[in-house]
Amino acid sequence: MSNRTLSLNDSVYQYLCDHSLRETAVQKQLRGVTHKMENSVMQISPEQGQFMQFIVKMVGAKYTIEIGVYTGYSVLCVALGLPEDGRIIACDINREWTDIAREYWKKAGVNDKIDLQIAPALDTLTELENDGRKNQFDFAFIDADKVNYDIYYEKCLNLVRPGGVVAIDNVLWSGAVADLSITDESTNTIRSLNEKLHNDRRIDLSMVPIGDGLTLARKR
Image (cartoon, rainbow, N blue to C red; front, top):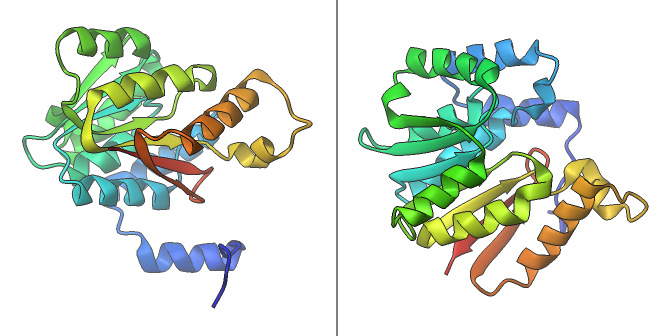
């Protein structure tokens, strides 16, 4: 019994992975390739990817949005949880990284579910709003430049239907949000958004201590 979240040392974390993860061979391959890259810390943890896939299945998602693709692991996790006619609009500006993503999406047989938009995410989200797509999406995942997190959140909240979920990554920011001596722009932005969401009556809220912290905001 415990009245607070358990800390995970290496052995407990390995136990969690050994007794929870159900990765496909392609997912493991993509994680392995990304692990060798200079910016590998930008990839979400496998247990977070599986958790997001679980959420997508639980809400019966068909149409989703992702902001910040990197090498495509999180998109792959979500795509594997969607029905055959499900679709993801995936936003990124880096062709080098997303070319890797495309390779593994094809290997996994989910490439046709993914509409990759190589453009600033704010442009893509605004275009979706202007095209009448408000309240049309079931799930959105935000994992891109932190200084625009609040704007991404507002756009996604407009686009997600009532009962849909906006998931926001890195909300614990390696613990920096709790250290008030850290005042860089990214940390302050995340800290302010966390405070805003805590008081946002448009949503039901849960901040989950998985990966680097994942907030789930269910639109009321």
